[in-house]
Amino acid sequence: MSGEQPGFDPLRGDDQPMRSSRIYCVSCRYDLSGATIGGYCSECGTPVADTVRSHHEEKQSSKATVALILGIVSVAVCMPLGPVAIGIAISARNDMASGGYSRGSRGMASAGLILGILATCFSAFYMLFLGIGVIKF
Image 1 (cartoon, one colour):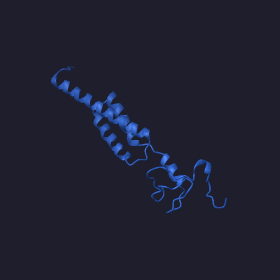
Image 2 (cartoon, rainbow, N blue to C red):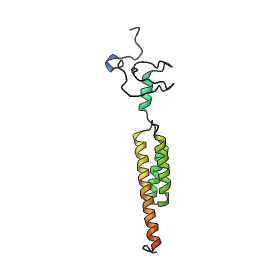
Image 3 (cartoon, helix red, strand yellow):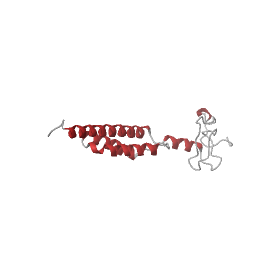
Image 4 (cartoon, rainbow, N blue to C red):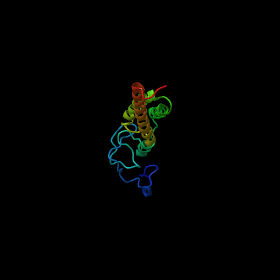
């Protein structure tokens, strides 16, 4: 018992190496490939479980939320907001490329991008038909 680490449970598989291709310590960014869940980072001593837990706690992107809201508003009310929704959605997707964001955020950014594209197309067709006189007031 004296040589075991606190929280070590062999039934949970804490002694098994992690199977992730690359995972880095949440504190010092040391490569923890091959480390066990019940172990500690050999560079800074942070429990490996803390790093694994932090990777499961993904964050939400506020830009993705804004892109979705602008996409909905641009389709429903104000078509010229479409390009703005597209720009913010692309920016959000670029930010999320580094990882750490939830699937919901990626979905919202994609939905905002699609709605922005639709609103921009609707706006272009509307202007085209207005310009050639098909639509008259």
